[in-house]
Length: 165
Image (tube, rainbow, N blue to C red):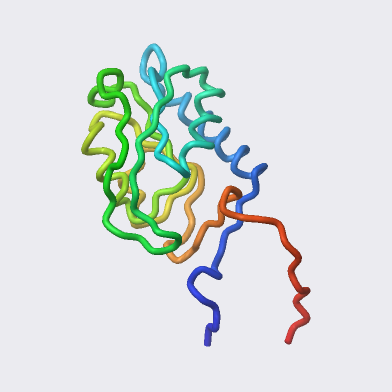
């Protein structure tokens, strides 16, 4: 019998790890860049902001914007809704644009984002099986029942040693 709660099947990501993985994402994206390079990055807030900053730096992309989609309250997912859009005069239909997020889970958030920018290239650092079809490029796949703990959601604290009891 498994006495763990669903969130206890966790994948803890440090700041160093997200930085390495976002750089790996940038390297992959360089290999699929359109002729002339990527013209803009759109970060999905809030989780996509750190990876998008790293990708934009690594690929020397100066036009960076955000789209805010609310779909989570802590660990409870609901129907996603856009609460802030990028400058669509610049982004257009997404041609030559990178959409960057930390993770695709079920893919529902990306469905909403893709509807606004259907020609954009979607990249995430991590991907779960249910949402993989919404992503063009990602670095690491994790199981659907894994909860990823990102460094911006964590604090360092003392943990009692495991003593096998």
